[in-house]
Image 1 (tube, rainbow, N blue to C red):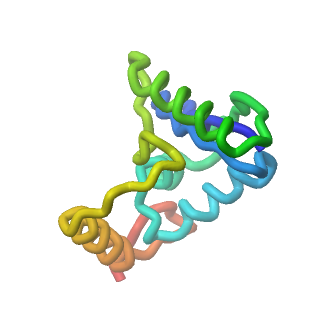
Image 2 (cartoon, rainbow, N blue to C red; image 1 turned 45 degrees about the vertical axis):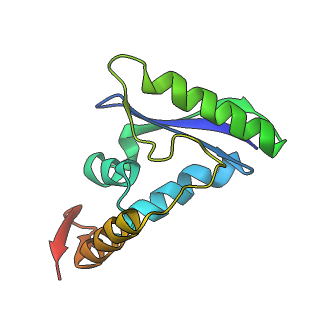
Length: 130
């Protein structure tokens, strides 16, 4: 496993992640981007610019999950303050539980419902209302 980053070669947007299987991870993100209800910044960018405009870069190889999460958090913090970088990460502290307030749950539910109302057209690479 290891820590990786996905770079948008057009906008300089960056997503930092960690996984036990580096080989499969980018494909996983590509599949998620095709599923409309995954509406995170990375997936929005993959849909908008096309996966051919992204690079997958391994930052470090680490099999120990705790060490991987520490390294991932280090790189997220590093890129979050790097000038001219748009960080796509939503979670800034990987591996730590996110406190779900009623307001956050409501916002996530609304975003999910909104995403399910639209259909991704593979031919035009755009979203259409159903």
